[in-house]
Length: 99
Image 1 (cartoon, rainbow, N blue to C red):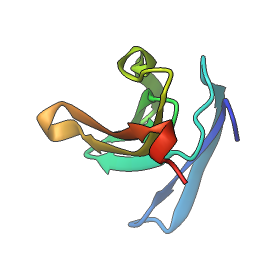
Image 2 (cartoon, rainbow, N blue to C red):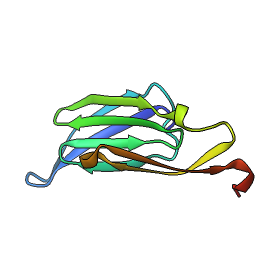
Image 3 (cartoon, rainbow, N blue to C red):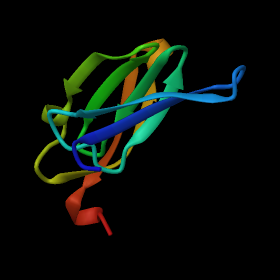
Image 4 (cartoon, rainbow, N blue to C red):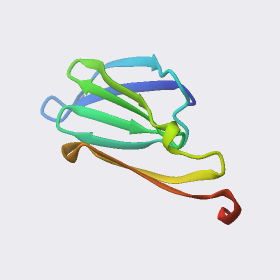
């Protein structure tokens, strides 16, 4: 919710939940897109902010604000993360064309 992130892991082998962690991101992570890649959890918000968490144990490994890539007259429609390629894709369009 906004800047707050709650993470809790589940072990398939043991069929048990691990300890939960609550953290506060430096900026809002609105309408997050979440990708799991290996032991990393990637969260990208519509404001072009990206948070990378290691899951064992839960540790912050990456934070970046890509909002400087978005002009004032643009709105972000979608955010896609491809961590294995090191790529973040922002699907943007001009506010005049946004519905």
